[in-house]
Length: 126
Image 1 (cartoon, one colour):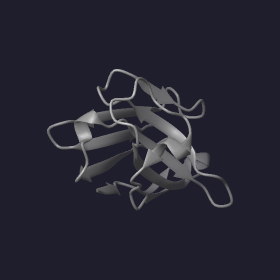
Image 2: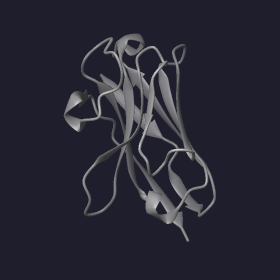
Image 3: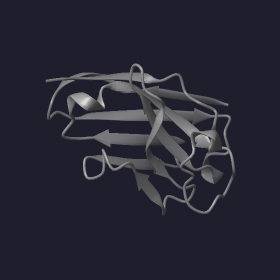
């Protein structure tokens, strides 16, 4: 299984970025997906999640209304559209797959996710 995240970069506050995560070797249609981030000196946190069927979505309070998660079954990809970016959004962003296929809802614990991607750096300047 490989998850390859890309799309990070340097952007000014108020700007936008779109992260992409391509999955291979994974039962993508049966897997919930999540985007996490980790800032220096902080724990990795769940930013957004989407269920295997795309019906349920979760957003952390800090990003709700600014970030949008989506998935494309034809491309085996999950995306994170990030708008109105703030300096506090600066972190390495990772995608990961729910370790339980066809789970109802979205797990909130990092330990319920498996197959981590390599991460992509997002830096928001003030």
